[in-house]
Amino acid sequence: MNRRPDDNQQTYLELLRKRMDVQAVLILPESDMLVPFREGTFYIVVVNHSHVDTSIRRMRIKKQVIVEQQISRWQLEKGAVNGLDERLAMMLAKAEILWDKEGYMKHMKQRLSRLPEFLQKKNICREYSRLLRFFHETKERLQQGMALDAYHSSIQSLDSWARLIVYEAGENPQAAIWSQVKQLDYSVYKLYEELSFNAEALEKRIELLLLAMEFWIISHMKNSVRFLIEVMEKRSGPWSLQELMNHPLIQDAEIEVPLIVDKMVQRSLIQEVACSDRPNGDEEICFILLG
Image (cartoon, rainbow, N blue to C red; front, side, top):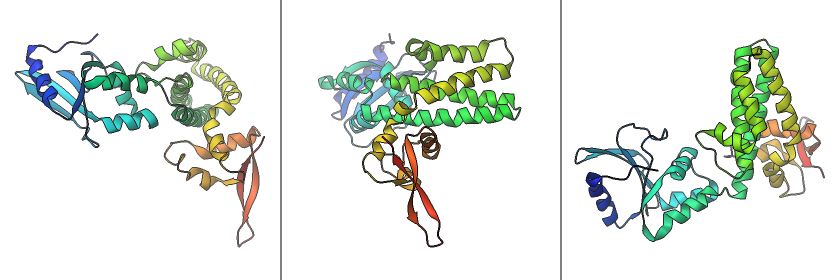
């Protein structure tokens, strides 16, 4: 599928093979949109260093332009557990292995293609919270008569919805995500298509999308917030909002916790309780799981 290195570039590859720290060399398709430069052949070099400068280098070897990005085994091992940067994950999925010491990269590509369950739940919860945010923004802007702003928010909500669908399938989002969603959930793909190409008035198209989206949000809520539920199950007592937001598993997850908690209360998944008395007599509202 990829352009094989020509005779001049073999010089570059031979130099890499002689380096003790190089584990594998991969090449990206010439026409791939993930490549930042249109000129030159793009190589990914996997090295054994614990930390690597991930900046991209452009070189000219025997009049041939070569673009090189290094990534360490440490980054890959960490990514197999916690997830890689999305663009890098897509690049590795598309790249062809040219040279692979001890078959390491072949095995690693298989590992990276499978989404760990913990990461899957976290990503689903994050995208669900974003879907909620953009759903409410779309609804509010439409009610205010700002159709174009509502349309912009609806596109953002569909993007989160699409990514959620992909994560539910245990996959990583691809650059052409709607082609991916078309294979996984044709009904959601059709909603995107109807919003984009239907001849009806824009406001009507957005209203129809909101109806379908609201039904999906309600019916898929419990599974979508499983990550947050499992964090709350780690203790039997109530949680303050701040405790949830500062939990080590949540604080860097980019999850809109207040929005999800509010929706969980509405759907009777959790209950509001008073968990502390303040000196001025006020009570802090906390949350406890139901059922």
